[in-house]
Length: 295
Length: 125
Image (cartoon, rainbow over the protein chains, first blue to last red):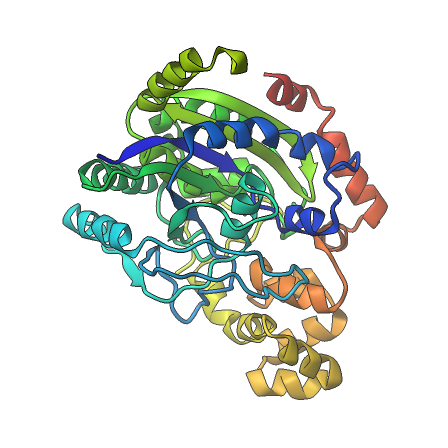
């Protein structure tokens, strides 16, 4: 039976991709952010997931304003990254898991989420950079199911709706008959604003509220309207919606494995977090017993 | 329709009104995902703006390289970033321009946020 092991949550600022491609990870500006990753990679190595269900927002690579889905689910066995216009080289993207995608789509529609299905879909830096951070220098050894949330053109879905979407995905994963080990990912944020006279706005207090509550009480994050979230987190800080949906896909109870918060990465307050499910904690404890040298 | 919620100072919500108003400008910027289109814009900026039917307000904003004017004309920063890339501007340059600061002062403001009490609390738990 499939098992959801946990979730990786990270900012996806394009400049991170630039730093990776320049080999700048150890420069003083970047080191505090990249130092977040060895424990994440170790956790992934121990858990050895087969599938990543990846919640993110497209920034104008696959979707334009001609057709802007609120929720879109990739339903392909192949995805690619591509030129986004400002100089980042495309990263390798692992294969998709179309069968699992369709199981998720069936469940979402059954649960009254009227999603857009995409058999062809370019995935942008918000998917490629997190995968490159988790598995540097190679194609990630997983299959992916990308799920995008509109954080570009208002009206955006509410945080409550995004959490409910994630919870419906959790049901689909629980019912999936395969034996895959699954990790969810939520990317974007935290607080930042690129546009307007308030450009450069960050809000560590709200970010801490999000990081403190996402694991134990994700419903706490749904008490703000999207407009309030823009005020609190900045116009692009609403990307926290991706984190909220991903958290919903993890099931009820999770424990925090790691947390890094760093200001600034480009114009953004950056965060990296890992949560694991009770199932993963149990199997991790078991593997630690078997290999005490690693404890 | 625009949101009826109270305005957030210095913040432009990209809603249905903006998305309609800015369509041509954003469509042009979306085209810059392709290198050949970026080259074509550089080769013949006016002709390229013609092709996408930019409004006079949008053309003036592009000509002035003014991000705030582009946003007022319906531009969305996710798409405008692709034009900024052609112009050799990163998001600190955009931030500096929109806030009326020097790039150096804008960068310093971002760095200084890290030293505030709320940030230290968030960083160190």
